[in-house]
View 1 (cartoon, rainbow, N blue to C red):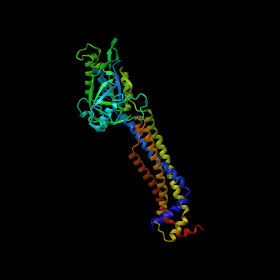
View 2 (cartoon, rainbow, N blue to C red):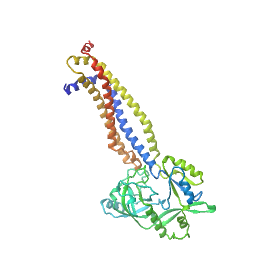
View 3 (cartoon, helix red, strand yellow):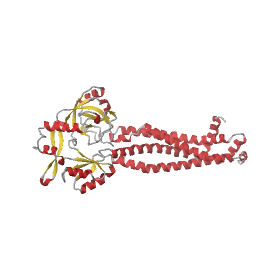
View 4 (cartoon, helix red, strand yellow):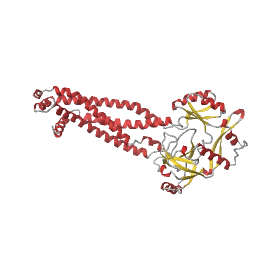
Length: 459
């Protein structure tokens, strides 16, 4: 039997199928739901999980304000259940802005940035890594394999002041990977670096102060670029350096200010040389264990924060929960409805065509050809619905990707990779095709039982 004959007979039946429109709508919704809900669920759930697994999200601040942090105190806190490590963050709390004076301009990226530096005010933050914290790079080298006074920058780099753009939306980012190999020259804003330090007051209690240190030029070699995302620490204006580099920057700034660290004459030198007055990060082995660590360390009488050092958007956490629970329920409901409709459509097609099937057998058509006609009928409806659902999903994702790409970098986690969308569309296509195949296989035994005399039933 020619395929054209199968197609002709099937199309005639499609027009008479009362479930025609319903199947198109439901299967289209199923395809869109599978692709869209799954894509956004994976994007948001992965973002939340990556955030929870990150070093900074698992870190809370320990201060010496209630009780100084002696070696015995640090050891006791280190032995608290679920504490991975307690890290001294002396010299790492510097978040005072730096200005970019120039960049070496060895390649096109550096030359373009140098031109912008002449007309735009700059703002970057230099931070050191903590303890055994790693900052993976997507290009170039990481800090572990680089010498001191090296840095890594965000792949989405925006080192400019933008006072009129409160939400930092639609920024003209610089590709950070294009700056690898350049040497960037920085200086503290207004020639100053902010140094937080602690001193002992009456009765052995501590309090915190800030000091403005003199900043001379700092030259950093850009060796790599990290992925800039709101679910990992480090924004579009962050430069990361090693702990050794950050300590050397601070020590030079103190020397420029006239502070002699080899003596204990000033409050700053006393603080610097006494680790019991330093601030620490307590790093949990798991994000979900931060609360229990906070409770136990607080009961020990120490000043520990109840919140971690950076946070992901609450809306992202809510969306991840919604998509992973309500979204899956909605998917299941649409799937069940699609199965029911396809079963009803297949059964209706069979019952309405008994006489036609008998007639076809009477003129010599074999069971396999009749089955092919009915299978083509349902596949045509499903593939048509799939194409509608796929096209709708593609348009929806394209529009949202465009919107999110022009918002702040915090919205970039909602941008869906088209390869992910294609993968879920493939799953949706396989899913609806299998449903149709199962429905049609059920009919094989019924088709075999129909005899040519069924052709007279219509009379």
